[in-house]
Length: 175
Image 1 (cartoon, rainbow, N blue to C red):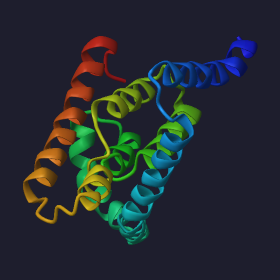
Image 2: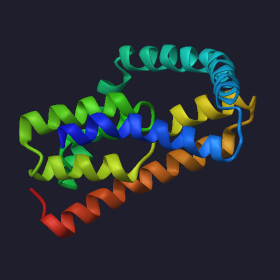
Image 3: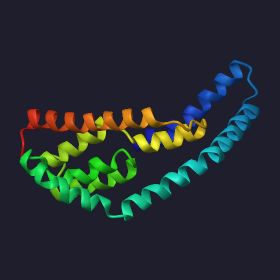
């Protein structure tokens, strides 16, 4: 398997080159044009990414999550929703990397086959990084009115979290 992984990318590059030669495409010029477009795209989305990272850091460092957790934790205990999953549920629409770090922490503390681990995995698959997607893609194409997209995306994430809990509870039982 290691040998296969070492030859797959060069093999793919050779296939692209031979296909380009067969179609009589100027491969090097086309490559340079694509690289130039990639740099322009990266340059155009850079301000959106910086603004998003800045906003996420302000949000996470404001300790507002702790306030929210303290308010909703009695309600969650009644519903038998593990409190350990809540940070991931809140962070997932903002940052995929941060939610993966929280999921890794859940795996380390409870194991991937625990109820919380399965729930974290299901939430990871049933939700999206809505705010990241809006900041990146809408920023790239200069869309400024994101009201309906944001509310719809966050509502879909909320439904995904609820569906994750219901599905994991039905299939694997509660804690």
